[in-house]
Picture 1: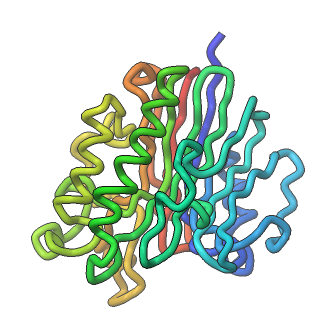
Picture 2: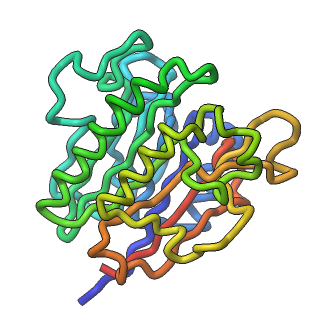
Picture 3: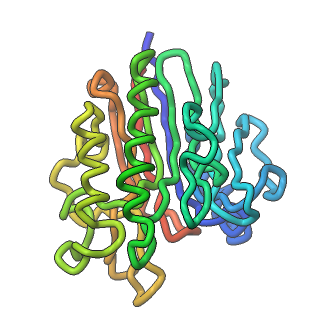
Length: 267
């Protein structure tokens, strides 16, 4: 017997700010996700006043206050939860900007028929100071993590990957080929995810959709003009392709510089 499951992922750019804007509770009430994955929470559990008794809260917060962090709110109790990239040796993911294993960037929740992974991928920085780290260290390590999980059961992976994969995924591709979020190295990281058998669920359902973005700069009225980027994703193991009933971007949801993205599965 297959069950319909709605999973939504949202980079909230500060959960306390979204709550303060009175955007969080109405969003939950309207869309009623079975599982909600958050990135860039910028808070520890308990710092944000959240009254959602039907959800179990799982937090992976950065050691540095008010920075990065992920969380999962789920109505379905997971079998097991792990944080960060568990096979990484201490210090192996550290560079001059810090240790990404101390920034709360990954949560993996195991459910009966699949693993759910939410990720907040490190930004390459405006002047690309962290591009080499991301390309040579982070992206390969994260891909290794989800491929290892897949040996046990299918994987659904979501979050802010800080990259627009194809030219169709941003409003001004020609202007951004050398900019963070659209460099060949970052796009290669996305290629590798697809080449290792993971499906971009949004493109599975909307292969040619243009103007479908999940992030907009706060400058020059970008969101109103829809000068945006699609950098938030749901990827799924290829074995789940027939289970994906819908995938979408909730562009109308305000409260963050990102829009939530969603996937609905029969599993």
